[in-house]
Image (cartoon, rainbow, N blue to C red; front, top):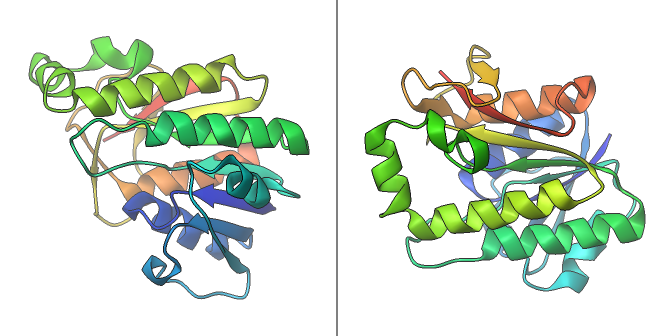
Length: 206
C-alpha cells in the first residue's frame, strides 16, 4: 500500500513510518526538515513542505492509497496546525481521489470528553486549552468530510515499547491514562488492513 504520513518526524509519526515500512508499505513522509527523519529505507520518500501550504500538502497526496495524519505541536500557545493542516489534507484527498484517512487526535476530544477524570478535564480545559480547541476543529473537519475516515484518540502518550496489548473502543475509560506511541502506530497500521473502524472515533489506552 502507498501511504502519505503527515507529522512524520514527530514522535508518533516516526513510529508510524517505522512500522509502515516494516509491514512493506511504501511511505511518503511529509516533513518540514528532512534532517529530523532518523529512518532510511528503500521504500521511504521524504517530501519537504509546509502543512500551511495547501499546494505542497497536495503533492504528497497524489497517487496514495491512504493518508495518515499525525500533526501536532509541543507548544502550549495557541496553534491551528492540526485543524488547518488537516483541512488542506482533506481538500487534496478529494481532488486526487484518495479516500482513506486515519487521524491521530487525543482522548478527551469530542464525545470522549466525558470519559476523562475530573483532574484530566481540568488540565485539558486549562493548560491544554489551545490544543483541545485545535483537536476539536480538526475532528469536526474530518467528520464532515465524505472520506473513509478513522479518528484515533490516544490517552497520555509515552515512548514505551510496542506491546500490542491495549484497549480500543468508543468513549472507553482509561485505566492508566497512558499508551505507548508504538502501540498507537500498531493499531493504525493494523486498521489499514482490517478497515474495521471506518467512520468511528475510538480511544486507545491501557
